[in-house]
Image (cartoon, rainbow, N blue to C red; front, side):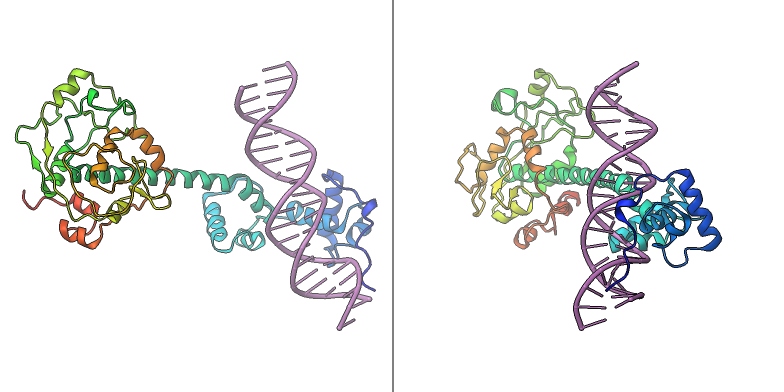
Amino acid sequence: MGRAPCCDKANVKKGPWSPEEDAKLKAYIEQRGTGGNWIALPHKIGLKRCGKSCRLRWLNYLRPNIKHGGFSEEEDNIICSLYASIGSRWSIIAAQLPGRTDNDIKNYWNTRLKKKLLGKQRKQQEAQARRANNTFKQQELKIRQTNNLVLMNQTPNSLSSTHQPSIQEPYDLNNLRNILTKLGGRVSPDHHLPHQYPYECDPFFFPPQDQPSYPVPNSSVINDCSTSNVFEGFQIENLQSNDLSQMGCVNTTTHQVYGFQSYNSGVMESSSTATTTSTESSSWADMSSLLNYSPYNMVSEYQEVMLPQDVAFDEPAAAYFGCNNFSEFCTTSNPND
DNA sequence: AAAGACAGCAACCGCCGAAAC
DNA sequence: GGTTTCGGCGGTTGCTGTCTT
């Protein structure tokens, strides 16, 4: 034995409530209350509805002081913070918002708030990716420095067919010079800073994703800018392979260096004749192949992995550079200046 | 103007712990 | 103490209006 069934399932009405039904239910409850028994209520009123359905209709729609729609920013914040801490406990969340029902909040969350937050999150991730991208540019710069790369003598003809940089962004050459000098490189005394030609032909500098494209410099401009080797001759011997990894250039899953076919760990050594594209070598020399790699492809690959925002060297390298991390290295002034 | 896609929301479904028998 | 239903809750559905093509 147990309780009697709440209603005759086959003989109850389903679907939207009519105004007449609403009026009957509302009038009865306002006059006499629920009596603590929802199951008996529809019989007393003469409604062909399940007691559960009556309860739901009253709680979510008919009871006084119900607010529908038009959630305020403050309510949004309360819902979000509570959802973050207790999850989808809608009744508890609703208890913190007078006039709101759990059903309303649930619907609001599922149809709007969730999307709103996802949109926000996506924007934040994009911003983070951009920040990481900037860091990556700095990291690429370092690779070039350690590989005795000559930065500004790349002519269109010296680039491989796979690399056709057409859009470049300006960069801070003074800062660059500062970094390279710290690394022990030489700065050509008669270098041509691109004052008049801000968009150097430099395959390492990615086009900004959220900024308008830059005009393509014509070939004469590029050739003019490339008549002098500005930076040259860097010898870096202390960098370990995991430096490269920490610099965000290595996919730790595939052990693939971005811009390389393959990369094996090992002590890096500088080379001034680096042009190899070997898939086995662990030499810094391999990094020259980055020059032959489309920066645009690199960007797309790079975006598949999360990179640290603040990239740190390991201790030996940090000691070598006298800095704690790469950001610090890039931003501190040159002690030789 | 019509059809399809999409968004919003009311209502139902099903589960679970508590309560009634 | 076992069985059954109730009350409450979260998940889901499906209707309806709006927007887009």
